Amino acid sequence: LTDLYNKRKDWLDPELNLRVIQSEITYLVNRRARYAKGIALENVSEFDYETAASQVPEDTPCLAIGGQACTEYLDSIGYQGTRRFHSGCELLGSTNHCEVVTLKGPTSTVNMMNQDPRGIVDLCLTFLER
Picture 1 (cartoon, rainbow, N blue to C red):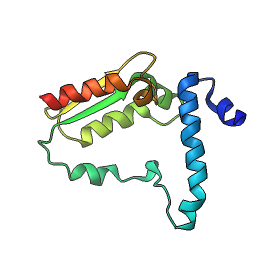
Picture 2: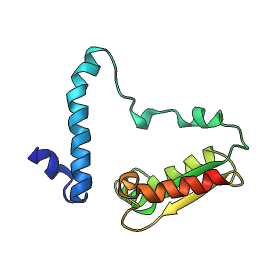
Picture 3: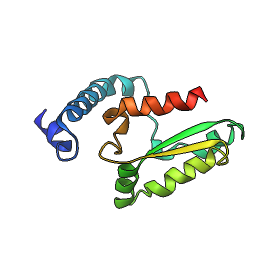
């Protein structure tokens, strides 16, 4: 448990770190059963976003929420977070139908759904009410 805690303690606050540890333990416990049944989790980096996005009608409204700290971090480790986020937004349609929101500040990290769930929910509800 100490190894799991120490893995992310430098960049996650303690509460979020404990939630991540809980998820990782659940993943590790269930992994053996999944593998025995031939179930594998899809590698997100290999997902065919272009095909999925091309099937969304052009006039379908969409909301793309990105985090400044998240994209900057991904940029810093060579994952081109900013470029990929903007490319994803373009795949979902014209700027007339795709609303892009970039969160800023300490909760705009890769874990923004866990760090600011109320803010994310508020953005989604406002979008859906239009």
